[in-house]
Length: 169
Image 1 (cartoon, rainbow, N blue to C red):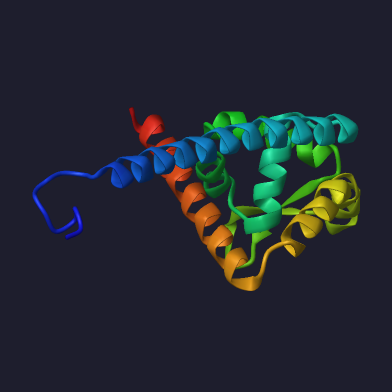
Image 2: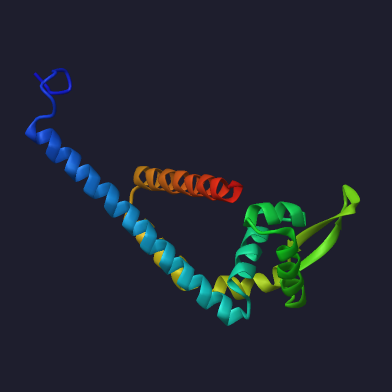
């Protein structure tokens, strides 16, 4: 009878499976840490080439992906104080990366949007990584890609939750 159904505790094959699972989980965590470092270094190089600070590049990406955004919404997404965000937006606007415009729904409110004419510069600097990602993804079938996408989405959500928890303390 299987150890799952018995009270005998885990058998030798079960403890081996548990060790393998722990090793795999640890390898995933370590790989995610390494990925985080490598992406941070890549983003730093991209920002340096563009003359943009790391935090400014992060905000530019958030505006590009989620915008147009109000400054308060962007501050929440970026996890920065609104006063800090004002400086970021001033630098991005002076650099020709974003514009602040009146919200058509509420003329008293402001929305920030990216300037499309500058997007090609950013895309070109990430071309090497995007090409490498295409090659990597080509090695997986559609079902595997779905699992990877789900894992990464859930990991990003966990990171978001952990960030909010720390910020609330």
